[in-house]
Image (tube, rainbow, N blue to C red; front, side, top):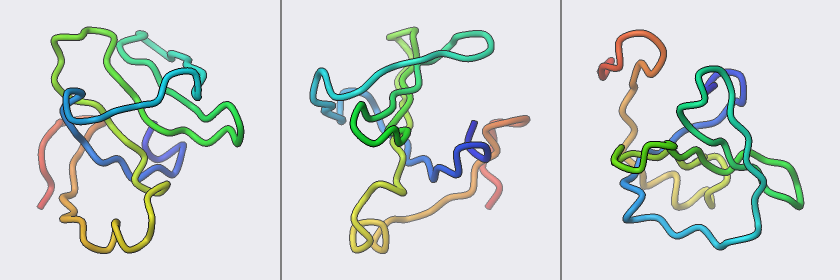
Length: 88
């Protein structure tokens, strides 16, 4: 989904992210292992979360972050399609 949405995913533990309730719609694709959330107002994909709550990772669309926040981020290239390995 990364390249199709044009998202720049920032990965976090769900324990470290707060998402205000009622502001997003969700949908699932393919094997339905995760829910993608989009803003009810503008339609932008905001994040994804695993349906299996024991999975300790979620993706937040960093392209929605303020530019100065993103400029300070450490970026690692990750193959989330085939190998699930860091590319750097």
